Amino acid sequence: MRILFKTSYNDDIRLFPDRWTLAVYAALLALAVLLPMLLDEFYIGEVTNVLIWAVAGLGLMLLTGQTGQVSLGHAAFLAIGCYTNTILIEAGLPFIVAFPLAGVITGIVGGIIAIPALRLHGIYLAIATIALSILADDIIVLLDPWTGGVSGKFPAVITIFGLEIERWTMPVRFYYLVLVVTMICTLFYRNLLRAPLGRAFAAVRDSEVSATAMGVHIARTKVKAFGLSCMITGWAGTLMGYYAGAFNNETFSLVISITLLMMIVIGGLGSIHGAFFGAVVVAFLPQALSIAKGAMIGGSVAIPGLETGVFGLILILFILFEPMGLYGRWLKIRTWFELFPFARKDMFRRQKSYLKTERLR
Amino acid sequence: MSLLEIKEATLKFGGVVAVNNLSLSVEEGEVYAIVGPNGAGKSTVFNLISRFYQPFSGSITFDGQNLLDRAPDQVADLGIARTFQNIELFDHATVLQNLLVGRHRHRKTSLVEELFFAPRVRREEIAHREAVEEVVDFLDLQPYRDKMIAGLPYGVRKVVELGRALATGPKLLLLDEPASGLSVEETQDMRWWIDDIRKQMGITVLMVEHDMGLVSSVSDRVLALADGAKLAEGTPAEVQADPAVIEAYLGVGAV
Image: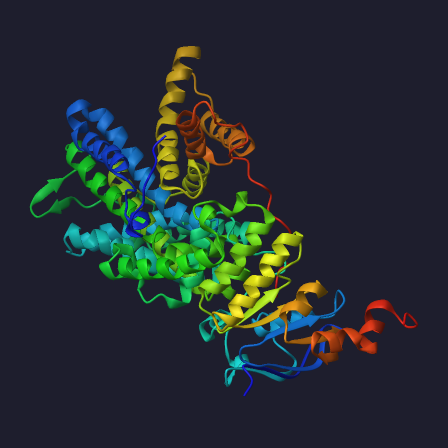
């Protein structure tokens, strides 16, 4: 067991609490940078997919895990980011400007949509945002002149200072682009968590009444959470568009929204690790399933709804047996080793909260 | 001039009159207690001051400013902090994070600065932390700094909630039943803390409490409420001896 001696308040604020953690993450980064030398291009593509899902997961995690607002409409924001980026590049902006701008525009749109939506709580907000997912499909078709409607669009070629990046012919370059975006989003997320806004998010999630009494403006905080969440989601959507190579009104469907929500629940709500763990599951499960299916009953037999069924089953099992998700499981395993042989079975059992103050107003 | 002044406030929920033409004034530097049977409207008075409820008529002024002009989230900015009867902490955050939320009204940084964690954000964070550490020292919360609220015993949560209110740096502290559910020793601690809050920090305290032992030992003045209206006001001994108060608690003919 490591013991930390803190000598200044900075020790609690810095990104890495100690040298050991810094070394672990530096090693992880080095591995990520060197990965193209270790894996062939197919697997680099798969890892890229994981990272893109992780960015999308970070976006939703900020809203659902951190601020406690469930959204089933995030596929719409993926779409907004994706289309905005392509349209901006077609309008002549360079990628390096269009890409950040696409995220910011998605964030602003998200913030505006949030103003009426956030009067709703819990399950009602989820239902209202489902409508958003469904509407996005129709709106894309209606805006045919800009979006290409049903026939869809191809993402514009990425050129950063003369360097071309294309997902199919240059997967390694695309991988590095996604890696950089992932790192920036993760850093933003971390920064928010250690700043007053991140704490305000948690305050809104856990008790709106006392957050108000502490001077937190609930609606404004939720709009900020929605905006920031949509910004990151917009970036993820752009990358998803590039990864798919083509997109139309059906690419960002309600199923994507549900998968996203499922992903962060399986990964572990309210943690950055959770978004990444969940992304690994979501990105690799279809492959793992088809390999398993091929081994058991032969690859040629199609089983409709297999993937959705297995996803659903996994989700139910997680909610029943590990509500803290994969990250929670990982924490438990780590603690068991750190404290060996003193770990107790009930260490992570939390007391149910006491009486809640009756809903005011 | 009184620090907090409520004049002829009335609040009705449908046909129920929760607060009936109530006037009270809290002077700077005193401990003012509100007592009364269940359903007398004590917590409702707090919710009026916190602006969670809008009175039908009457006025509330704090420090010379009209409180009724303010939104609920602006009350803390004026220097009013409160605790809740049933503990409303942020359960999935650590004690430190809870206390730091108390510093929310003192933040000066913008969203973009926080996103990039500009040097100013770090400086501010350290300043907030120093302020919070004073509260931690005052309330002996050192062992719990990094503990999740969800895993803490009731008594400690009560203290953390008091700490969070103190971290806002208030002029007026509203304590809604600070001793409910506490053991004898914990109640004793709470009594010393309330004394110190008034004497060392110079914070005015307005509290709702059922424990008459605590009320009579810390408060300067007591207001007895029944059915939303004032029964008696005065020193703890005066109020306890008041026939109307005895009648409200024990019924007619008990004396």
